[in-house]
Length: 100
Image (tube, rainbow, N blue to C red; front, side, top):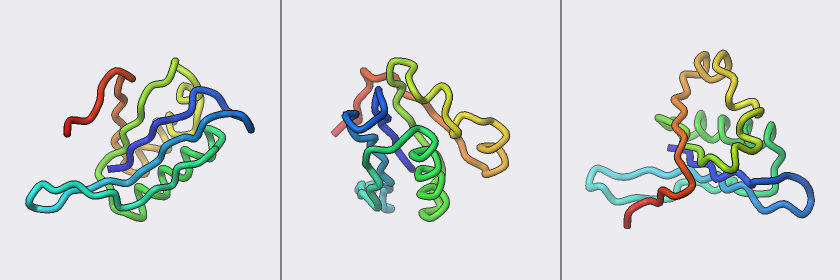
């Protein structure tokens, strides 16, 4: 799975957009397989996330919703592009956290 925590703003002073590839083994142990986090513009982090999805043969992309922000208008939201790539998108509210 590719997980995205987009920055609420963009530009030089913005925080980083978190982009990680995670997986688990047959025993259920979780691993970080890749980290492409950085200060990316929305169209750029969307392309990075899709590239990570393809490179790691992920089964989905999970993105956190941030203030309805950049996620609304980015390349990743285009149904034609995501469906043709076979990408399943899931969105999570900011209050949800992964269980330990």
